[in-house]
Image (tube, rainbow, N blue to C red; front, side, top):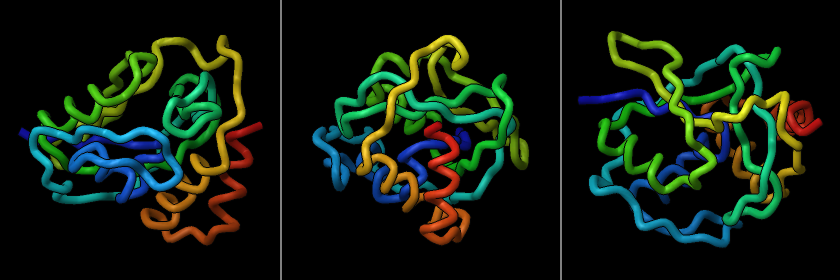
Amino acid sequence: MQVWYVSYGSNMSRARLECYLRGGRPVGGSWAYPGARDPRGPSARIPLRLPGTVYFAGESRVWGGGRAFYDPDLPGDTAACAYLVSVEQFDDIHAQEPSCYDRILHVGARDGVPMSTFTSAACGADVVRTEPSDAYLATMATGLGEVFGWSSERAQAYLRRLSH
């Protein structure tokens, strides 16, 4: 069985997602991941826009600085990408995330296949925002370029909007 794993943060970068599937440490990160039980790459990747916005909070053990969280109830527009993976791979990706990603959201379906992401159960309007690290933002910008074909300048403008 398959699911579209929807990423709105650093996992938009294919190389970053591979750390969750195959294991390893992302460029600029300080944490190595064990990988998934099934290390195969996704069978498809598509760009996606979601209602709501991304905010940064907490302290990432991988990147330092704030982590990205998605809140569908806040005003805005979120650039994301969806990877077609097995349900087992989705579960393994989620299991390698910190416990603050404690809410699985179903954000639609494509061709009859469910689309899901994970975020914090805390409401984005109620949390203290923290600045993300440059390495984290650079990985997100790489993913935006890969998925949407955005220039570095356009990706940076989008990320600046999220950071403030």
